[in-house]
Length: 135
Image 1 (cartoon, rainbow, N blue to C red):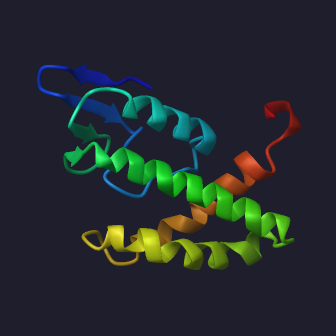
Image 2 (image 1 turned 180 degrees about the horizontal axis):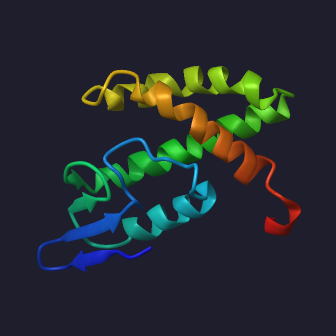
């Protein structure tokens, strides 16, 4: 991942490390993404030119980090309770919706619901049940 930092302007361009809202985890690694966001929070800037969407403020990073952290925790909890991926998908989506679905209000209706299933599946396979070689 490349980040462009303009210290005088207090702006960073993050590519897809930060997006306007709902990240796509199908080709990402949620735990690594959280670490990347934490590292970005340490940089002195005020605005982000994200990989997709409009310019956002630094607060977007903590929002995305919170989403990924909560998503991982919810999938781990559902798995520990014995839920299959198919069973946990609607439950986890509903569990996280009050906090994260309103963030989608300016986007096409249903984008949270359209993407959350892919993200739950990615966490399920890449975090909870990742191959032992990756542990």
